[in-house]
Image 1 (cartoon, helix red, strand yellow):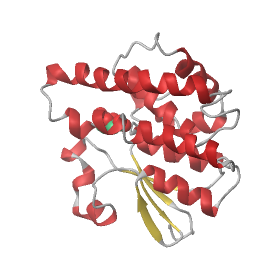
Image 2 (tube, rainbow, N blue to C red):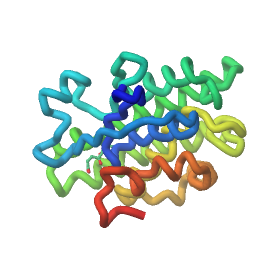
Image 3 (cartoon, rainbow, N blue to C red):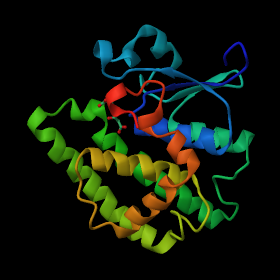
Image 4 (cartoon, rainbow, N blue to C red):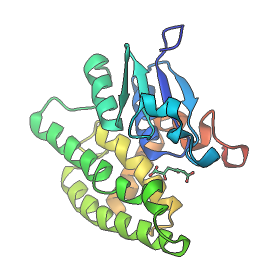
Length: 217
Ligand SMILES: O=C(O)/C=C\C(=O)CC(=O)CC(=O)O
């Protein structure tokens, strides 16, 4: 926490995992301070000794709150949910709750880590885009099928949930890597509805303290 008692979010504007947490903080109206960690500058500020002490995984996001420092976006979101339950991001019904976690894991474990910067950096420059498209398409094929059964207005029914916090940043990554979204009408529709919400807009990569001027909107 800062001296004023605000939580501190270690974040990078374009990190999809940081964006998930920024949406949760916005939805729950939690005031916080951002400490930007630039994942490319100086060879990656996440590798500094100072940051490693905060998050040994050398990844963003990390959140300092209530006297602890937490890494892993879904663990952070679940902590916020348990300590600041309004508005709810996990449905009360165990079956719906399980579907929310399933979709969140599908994205957070089954797609995003495969197209993470650290993975793409292992590929030759000429293979990066093809690889990112391949893993996102493979995941989105499954996700589209899942959502056809679970979605209402949003991923699971008509209430915004943790699954939606994972969906929107992953669609932004898909767009960044020029994935053709035509085969995924349900994903596109839900994404559009969510982007109309204030919490998804204020947390957007184009509006962060560390967003470079040319990417601001
Ligand atoms: O290229 C950069 O500017 C550096 C890192 C990112 O954007 C974040 C990722 O690639 C991971 C992700 O959000 O999936």
